[in-house]
Amino acid sequence: MLHDLAEGARTVGELARPFDMSLAAASKHVRVLERAGLLRREVRWRTHICRLEPAALAEAHAWLAAYERFWSGRLDALERALAEDSATAAADEVIPPEGDNA
Image 1 (cartoon, rainbow, N blue to C red):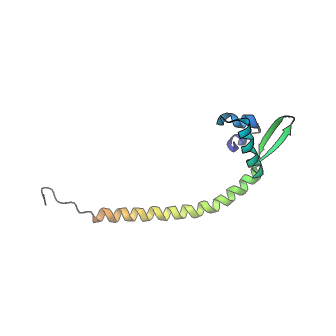
Image 2 (spheres, rainbow, N blue to C red; image 1 turned 135 degrees about the vertical axis):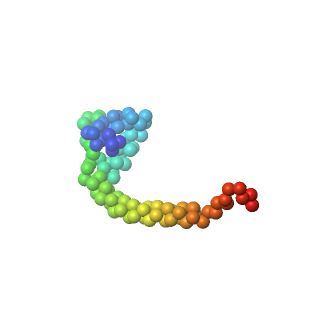
Image 3 (cartoon, rainbow, N blue to C red; image 1 turned 180 degrees about the horizontal axis):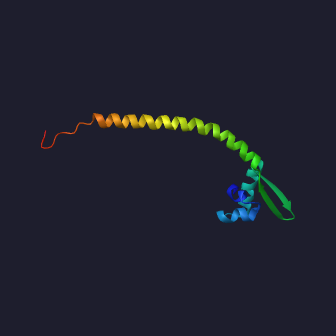
């Protein structure tokens, strides 16, 4: 839904359509996103128009960026450790010479 809202304002029905969900289910999702501050809903008679709240997304992005740096470093260290283990295991493998049926 947030991806669709990045393209512009949408009604709740338009947000529900690609997900093959009822209008009631879509409304529940919209309420959760609204409470999280990720979208703003404007009611025009019976139509609910939703707009993305980019400030909240920027805040979430900043929070996630700190963890991305942490996990990138940890995953790089894991990759190095696995490569070292693999190289050590390959060096330790003993391949018998051809013709040796021992």
